[in-house]
Length: 114
Image 1 (cartoon, rainbow, N blue to C red):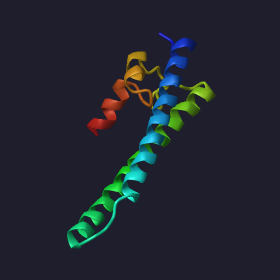
Image 2: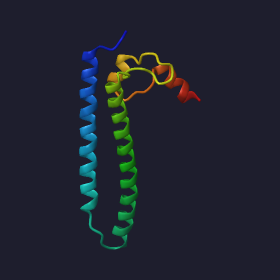
Image 3: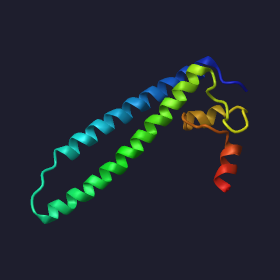
């Protein structure tokens, strides 16, 4: 069954909302990290750990932003909901659960098993 324009619009809203949440989280996280003060050696060690965690979190949220942008681009290009492996349709239920999905379940399972 082909994805309808109403379904695409609903998923687009979901993607845009996720994009805003991602941006807000990054902003709040950066403010929290930059607001920390250093003191003694324990604080310095904690600060180093915080810096490493910040790097990991930033990388994850940058990657999430790329995924969201890719899905939004696919909507613009009229290719949203098409599997990148087999060019078949991605089930609407899968897209509702994971709007950034690039592959149908069968192709994703093949990739994960290899």
